[in-house]
Image (tube, rainbow, N blue to C red; front, side, top):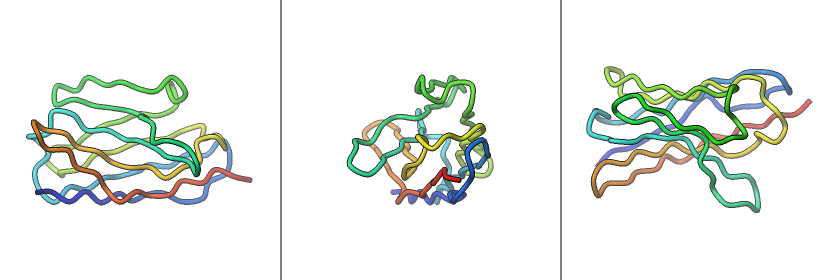
Length: 115
């Protein structure tokens, strides 16, 4: 079992930046894939970015060139650097970790982009 705790969300103006963190309660080395998803009110939860143990990354088209996902196995932490934020990036952001049959989610952190 592992707990994932997201932090770093908040209110930011369009064009601003935020860095989200997802702290795991144990080593993340065993997770083949970790990722960030987001869900806006009334919409489905969508993939934002993924990263594998090998460091391969995948991004939603809407965030390519603006967001960067990274993981620090030594700190048990997943990050999402978000630059050039847009109002349409407003959502609750969730951390996900997958390894074998295990699939874990954090509780989410709210990101609001508004002037």
